[in-house]
Figure 1: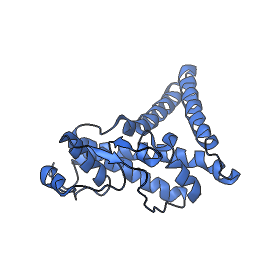
Figure 2: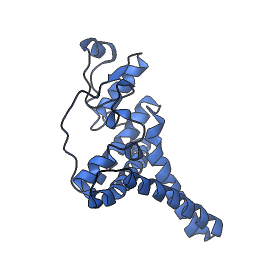
Figure 3: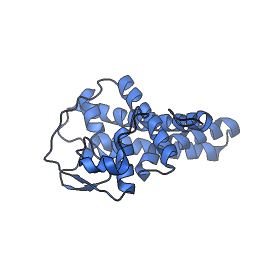
Figure 4: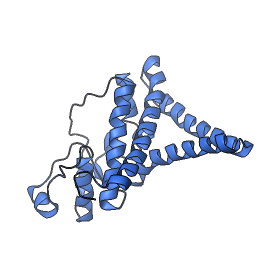
Length: 206
């Protein structure tokens, strides 16, 4: 499962167009892990926001871009990262990522990248269609839900088939890990938006 999670979090079908997760070509990016910064950047935009429990780096990178600074990605740089080893731990991790992404969105009143909204749109679509099916029991609602689930399932299956060189056991688990990423992040995002709407941003007066 840990290897499947590695592959899911290194795939554009798992984490979208954030090239630093999987690209082998250098180039300009909107964010990366981990970053190295010039000291004067902090004089310009301030330090990391310590009221954020997650997404501190993305918050910093967004502020840097808004200040006209750019980030260069070089795949020759290497770091060691140990992934979560279970779906429960992966769900908890990406739920928190989505929750704190919502905090960052509310803080800046903008989205750092459209890709961050894709899991939230998926969760909203599935929840909305499911609610419509239960409330109306109409064939059109059922058809919309079925089409949405089928399209998403196709993405998950494709994610598994793209993993060449993986054992059959790992490849079979990749779609499950990708689905966990999508749902956890999307659910966390909506929960974070709701919390911020009711209580305001963490660490700040409402």
